[in-house]
Image (cartoon, rainbow, N blue to C red; front, top):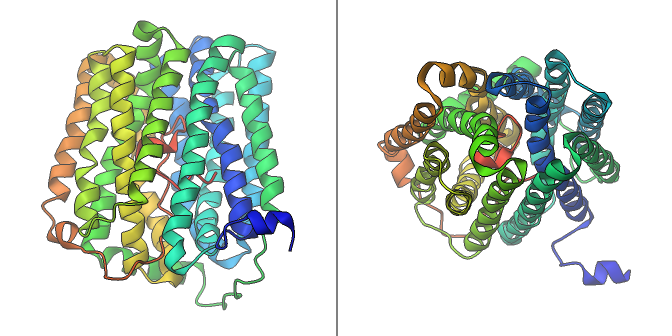
Length: 434
C-alpha cells in the first residue's frame, strides 16, 4: 500500500479522488469565467440585452440536448462522455479567449462559442452525476458527498473572488483562457477514471423507451414534478437577476467587476457554510426544510434593486448561498431515497430539463424588460416571483410530509442549475462537477 493510499480516508477511493480533483480545478476556472464572459460583452460595447443573449445562448443547447445526454450517459462509458464534453468546453472557451484578446469580438461569435459550451454541459452533467454516485455507497455516502461539496464550493468561492479581481486587473480574455486550461486539466484527470466495477447495461428498448420510462417515474411523484416546476421559475428569474442585471448594477453603482466578484464569492462562502451545516443536521421532513430555504433566494434580487451597498449585498448573497445548500442536500437525499437507482440518471435529466427550460427565455427578455419597466422594477419582480412559487409548492402535501427513513441513506448528486452566464450555484446547488 502506498503512502497516498494510507493517508486517504477509507471510503475515498481512486475515482472519488479524481472526481473531486477535477471538479475543484474546473470550479476554480469557471466562476471567474462567468464574470469574464459578462464583462467581455460589456467591454465590446454590448448592453444588458446583449449580455442576456449570450447567457441564453449557453443555456438553450443545454435545454435541447439534456434529455439526450441523460440517455447517452446510461448507455456509453460515463468517463468517456465526461472527457469528450470537457474537451469541447476547453476548445470553446479557448476560442472565446482568443477572440477577446485579439480585439472586438462580435456578438454572434460570443453566442456561438457559449452555445458550444452549453452543449458540452448537456452531455457532461448526467454522466458526472452517475459517475459520482458510483464512487461511494452505504452509510459513508452522505459524508463523502458533503466533503466533495465542501471542496468544490470552496474552489468556487476562491474562483469567484479571484476571477473578479483578475477581470478588473488584466481583462476578461485572460480569465477565459485560464478556464479553458482548467477544462483541459480536468479532462486529463477524468480520463483515468475506472469504470470496470459498473456492469454493462443491456440493450433495453432503445433511447425513446428509456426516456418514456424516466418520464413515467418523474410524473408519478407529486413532490418531484411540483418542485421542478417551482424551480423552472426560480432558476429563470435568478438567472436573469444575477447574470444580466447583476453585472450592470455592479458597473453603474458598485464599482465594477471586483465588487461583483466579491459578492459572488460571498455566495460561495455561504454554500460552504451550508455544506458544513448539513454534515450534522438531518431534518426529518427534508423537503419541507429545503423548500423553506428557497425563500432567501429572493434576497439578492431585492438587494440589487435597492441597490444595497457592497457589504449588504455580500451579506444577503452569503445567506442565500447557505440556504440553497440546505435545499440542495435535502433534495439529493429525497431523490436517492425515493427514486430507484437504475432510473436516477433519466429522472435527473427530466429534473434538469424542467428546471432550466425557462432560463434562455428569461435571460433573453431581461434586457427588454429593463427597457419596458426599468431595472429596479424588474428586479423586484424577480424577488416576488421566487416568493410566490415557493408559497405555492409548500401547499403540496407530499412536499410538506415526505420524511427521511430511519437509517441513513446514500446521497445522490443534485442537479446543477446553472445560471446562464454560467454560475450554477445561483439556484439549485450542483455537485460542483463540471
